[in-house]
Image (cartoon, rainbow, N blue to C red; front, top):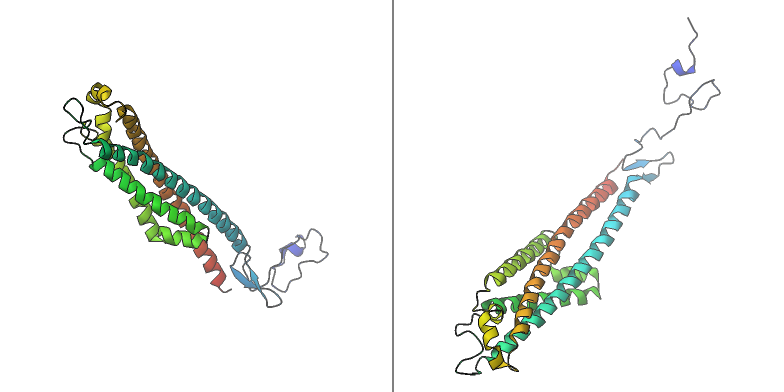
Length: 257
């Protein structure tokens, strides 16, 4: 029977790990009071050492924070720009109607006798509100990110409610604006054959072709605003992901060995 070598001897905490035994493996030593991946542990000198997991999570949190700020700023700038353009487009159409509705040529006015304004007013009002809110958020960015988030109501569950509500509203408005194109609304009337037939009588007063084109642009802009709000909702995934990372860092920091 072969004589037992060093590797066959049961190891104990006090067994030397760096002896000149032949074929003895080099072992990695850790303090006896610690598991290497524990959040915090006490070193041999009694000091508390931080887990290598925490710096990794902190770096992940930093990257998520930067990405969220960048994407939110872009979405807010895009949403505000789209809303301002929509206000301009629909505002011109409403102004054209209000300043020409009492004009008569050849025994009739330029618009339908039963003109429906609700879709234009709805689009104009929502775009104006969105633009004002967007301006407030962008101005707040000059002071701090926290101030911008406060203006937007971006705090926890409120963030989800606000962004989802904006998305639903813009989808509903885009659909309603298109459905309202029945020939009695400003957009539908301007694009109708009747408007083209009476255009010569109102030359220099109303350009129905331009009004029709503005209606098309307004509808496209409403869809674009809905897409921007969908992106804002998608950013919430990153926000919640960062929230989980921050909670994990806090848990590891406060955990005692």
